[in-house]
Amino acid sequence: MRTIMVVLALVAALGVCATAGAGTGGAGGGDQTYGGGGGLDGCGSEAVGVGDPNYDGACDYPETLDSVGEYAKTIDGAASRCRRVEERITYRAAIARTMIWQYVQQIEWCWRGGIIRTVNRIRFPRLSFAGSIYWDFKGHIASSCASWSDYSTCSELAGRATAYIATQGKFQSFSCGVKLFCITKAPGMWARINGSGKVLDYGTL
Image (cartoon, rainbow, N blue to C red; front, side, top):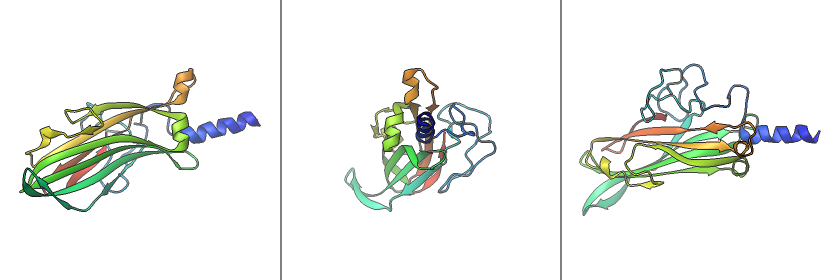
């Protein structure tokens, strides 16, 4: 009985289910629609390079995007408008559907006269208590910004009318370290913004 309880606890914490498989995304059949908006996730489409908006990656994990209303800032001595959005992918327990971990990208950008003046990107993991016990965040494995740091100014995007910001991270189950079955997840996401404060589109890598 104790063995059965331990196995059930592991299944709940690792989020394993019959349809998920042990690999990285890509198993979901036809195209799905993103929770909270966006377009089709591209599941089932031909695989392309990492960083391309059509890359087949974490299709099993619909992402959500929250936006903060516009606010004013002074950029280079001139009044500008700014906005912050948070895009996140949530991995949930198969049975309880509680959050195990999230991969998050926050983007703040300011604009003036239809042109993007600054872009700041922060990316990080959020782990629940169970997630912190059974999962390990291995770091970021892709970035559209020139800087790979958790906090990036993405200064190369200033002066454009539109900008594309993307990131991808890597999570592994604790079982990888003790030579048991190993689960690796590599969620990624992207957003396209413009110089009038709009998110033109967003999706998963």
